[in-house]
Image 1 (cartoon, one colour):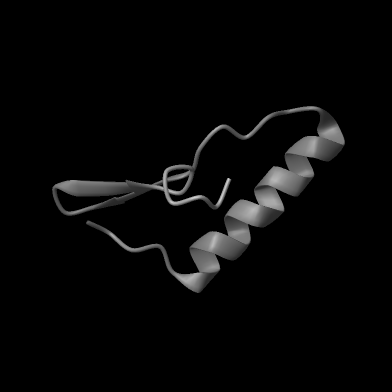
Image 2 (cartoon, one colour):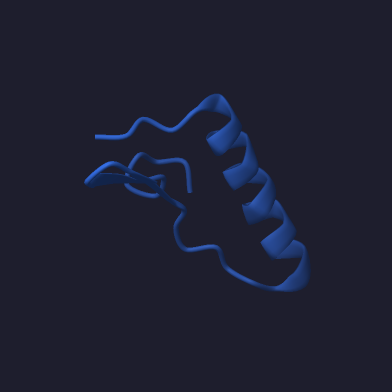
Length: 46
């Protein structure tokens, strides 16, 4: 499993906040690695 970096988590938070301002729901942020992925929603960051 790919672990999100601090920067990944920070960017996700900023995207969610920006989305709120313009009326777009960010439903997930997927980090893709070699033959695996991680959902920041599943990890509780969204």
